[in-house]
Length: 137
Image 1 (spheres, rainbow, N blue to C red):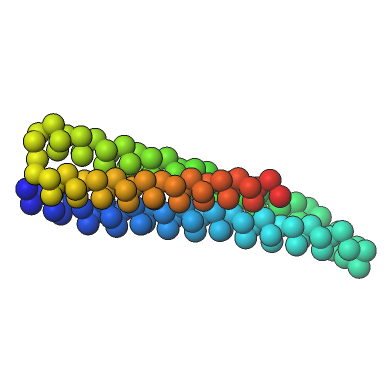
Image 2 (cartoon, rainbow, N blue to C red; image 1 turned 180 degrees about the horizontal axis):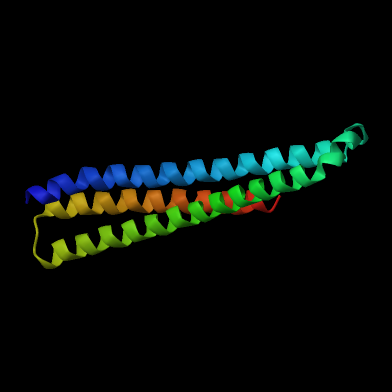
């Protein structure tokens, strides 16, 4: 019984962490795309012609930025997958409580954990979509 009460705060904080991670990853991917767009715009400027002599360095920097962007997108999708697993786990725990004939308070707590997991999953999915959208710009 004591494990049920301690599991609820863990799930609550775990879901918040997943949602926060997904959001920060999406924002990071968005910032990378803005920085890249600004740097692309700067090289198109005729006044930047002397900077084109250093193109190999710029290509290396662009490749690094693209790799970081791809990693951020992958991390956003990984966070969305983790949030989905948390939702599935919370649902399974609630179902198990119901089949075991647990008290209504325990089932209500499990339902609250499911609601939080659902919200975290939605936030993570939105963050992954935002990362995908930022990559498309």
